[in-house]
Image (cartoon, rainbow, N blue to C red):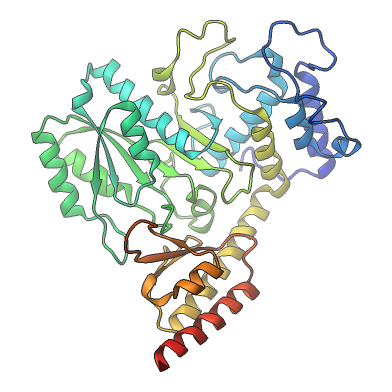
Amino acid sequence: MIYWKKLSKEERNNKVQKALNANVNFAKDTSLGYPASKLDDKVFYDADFLKDAPVLQTFVANPNHIGCHTLGDSESAFKGTHVLEKEVLDVLAVDVFKANPNGYDGYISPGGTEANIQAIWMYRNLFQYKNQAMLAEIVILTSEDTHYSIPKAANVLQLDWLKIPVAFENREINALALEAIIVTAKENGKKYFIVVSNMGTTMFGSVDNPEVYTTILEKYNLEYKLHIDGAYGGFVYPFSNEKSIINFSNPKISSITIDAHKMLQAPYGTGVFICRKGLIENVLTKEAQYVEGMDLTLCGSRSGANAVAVWMILFTYGPHEWFEKVSVLQMRTQYLCSELDNLGIRYFREPHMNIVTIHSEFIPKSIAEKYDLVPETHNAENKWYKIVLMNHVEVQHLTIFIDELKETLLCLKEN
């Protein structure tokens, strides 16, 4: 690890305080030009406990992290907390996802949905600027299990979206269907492909093999850009599967989305967008001339407090304690799977993820409702229920769930 380490509470507090002191202080400084301020004292009053709560101090200070702090200048009024965001990005891009130092750009986004749209927007513009591509020549390619942010992106950006079927039991991409869809798309005039490969789908935790996409696209000499949607799996998979090459060590991967408000337990909404150098310039908003630096993000203004919250989490744990936390969740997940195996209950689980998705035929509706199990669909015949092994889900909770499930299934069998 180059950037990621564990800091003491005092070190963390001092560093956040130093960052806030480097920012403009709307309570004390004469700052006439900014249409923003610290949170309203009549509502968000200054309390004594704030001195020991650096993240809450940052929420009150309300720094604006507009722009992309890995490229060019940024708003000098908030330079202190911008530094902490850059440290977060160094940890995630370089230490976790194997980018070269100073070889990436990125920012803390207001969630994974925007980060995914940012990627597709960036590649759409790249193909338009570089190849003079028409919208009708660009297409998004994903599995059918992909997140709903992708059809949102297709709608907003006016691009066609092609869904690839996956196997029902193991959720693997159907390579034969993928090739047939790509061939048909090429025959219909599609020349440029934006591929979104999943690292932990929302419903199943399944992880796509991006080589399935790239091998076929290269077979037909088609131009593509490969984005990894690790919104859920980004804080799990790289730690549970240390042999993973779904990172920037793979030269075919150009960008990655991660969510900090899932596994990392940061405030909603806190996503992360990271891409290789030389790409994010394709979404520069030249009209934002009053912004110091460059606005290269979809959202524009965004909360610096969320970036500081992620910084606090990462540097509270450090890499070794985070690995330990993920390992504990993996053991709990394996415990649940072993109990389901003993009951003969069918389920899907990606071996390096902490999501277990159970065939709905084994889950009575009463059990699903009592334990807040998430169905695959609320609008049709549901075939799956999902359990996510987060930090609050302990073995004792799983034991109670399994015992009640066993008793319910036994009663159903007897009747």
